[in-house]
Amino acid sequence: MIEVKKLTKAFGSKKVLNGLNFQANEGEFVALLGPNGAGKSTFIRILSSLLNTSSGDIKIAGYRLPQQAPLIRSRLGVVTHQPLLYGDLTAEENLSFFSRLYGIPDERNRINDVLEQVGLSARKKDLIRTYSRGMQQRLAIGRAILHNPEVLLFDEPHTGLDQDACDMLDKILSTVASQGRTVVMTSHDLSRIEMLADRFDVLTRGRITSVTYKTSMKGNLLDIYREALKN
Image (cartoon, rainbow, N blue to C red):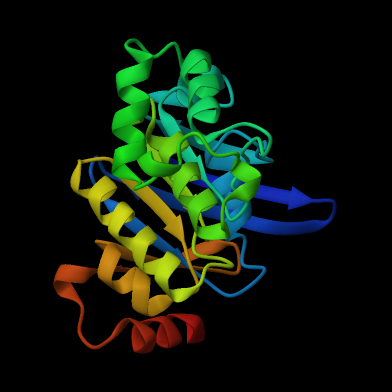
């Protein structure tokens, strides 16, 4: 589903990603871990087609970046710590706008289904600027899954949320993952990501230096993560 080979990204003389190799299979939930400045957000932006590479090969759902970026975008759902919604539109109006961009048939029923899934049906007529941070993030996930994408990319989606909002977000993420989508998510919250993901990749020094599957884990994720940072 996602194949990355020898990916390099430099900003001026600084290499942020340096020969990175990565693969995520259909239906797999991969947590991308690493210290601040490791290049996690840069990698997500590249996969999202928002940032070009310096070199390397990327294929998503059988299409190549950057050559076939428009075809890839239609298969992606992207959520960052910034909800990227229109504050002076209602939840319903926001999703209607994106529905038209994606050419979604039976728009009204699909919007209602998504609002129900993210728990915002009762507030669908309210302006986004009246929403809490957690509600905006839930709607951002609704926007990302609106067109039933094959791949979902999440960059620190829990940032700035309180405990209750994080718990709500986890439930939504679990539901999304159970529907067979491929998910790649960055996070610093190891306790939460340990419950959600199938696989844990550690990104340091511009490369994936450790890959651990939940089914073969020995010990807790924090210990595994600390050990990976030493290598």
